[in-house]
Image 1 (cartoon, rainbow, N blue to C red):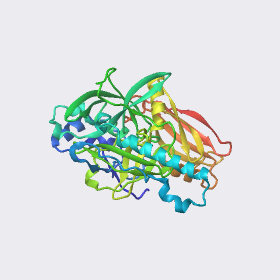
Image 2 (image 1 turned 135 degrees about the horizontal axis):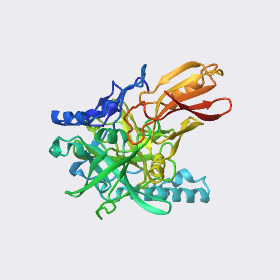
Image 3 (image 1 turned 90 degrees about the vertical axis):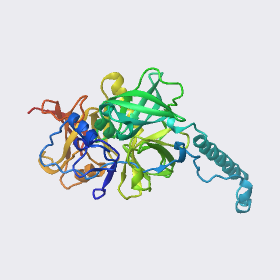
Image 4 (image 1 turned 60 degrees about the horizontal axis):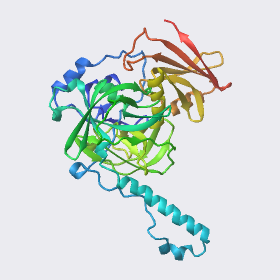
Length: 415
């Protein structure tokens, strides 16, 4: 992956402060004034010395939909009649035949739940920045968000979500635009929580207490997806709603889902933040990237939303830092990982990786598997409510994982 170039849907000049140099955005600001306005409001992020990050950035490809409505979604091949298969099933007992009938019926019902769903534009919104509200709509950069429903401590709640790099680039005050036919429904939103950039590209949006009755919140998937499972998605590119076509899960590493994906580059910009929907119409992930010219895409795992909701309600939350089967420790939702070092038994550095906003599980495992390595030491900075602002005045600490003891502990850092 390190040689791949990622395509980003973030449509503001501010993105350079969030992602490493060398990243390119697929959607460019249509006017110089927009870039200037964004740049004036951007926060400069000093980098630590000797930073070596993975190159690339993120976006999602898509295919336009005529009339801005979602077409019926072709489901998985479904048996319309088991009788047609009787010659091939003559040796199969009646129990197996009945099981096949039931499986076919369930698949047909699941596929119907998507194709019979209401207009997706009542759940999925075009995102625009309040920083650039003075510009004509056609000249504003665009991204995607959606609203979802969940239950917290027995109470049903409705929130919004998008990709974290979108939220960091467009600012905390956003405008969500839904459509009921040709009628716009405008909802203000505020970014209140970000997933740690090494864990998940997710942002939680606070919405008004009362939403227009036409808006339809999406349910979150409660069961992990399985390899080969089919998804659909839709969002906004070039101010038009597009349907991204069917995708299938290739890999799930608990932070990101990887799906097969192959559509023209010209349709990719703006779709980061779009929900990935399973056959039941539940959100399993949030689009955050695709490989330039490649045939696969990435979505942040929506399981991280549980931690962001906890942080919003309780003031803080800890998210597991994992590498393959290993749990290396916990991060606060507000913490940034600057670097990870491989240490020997005397805690001398024998390998180092400077994250520059990206740290893959394979990188951590490669450091941990070097000869003589016993510890991994992560430098953490707690940036609080300002996730893109580096400051030596912020709290710093080390997270240290002991490979032999399979345990971890923390050390404060004092400058």
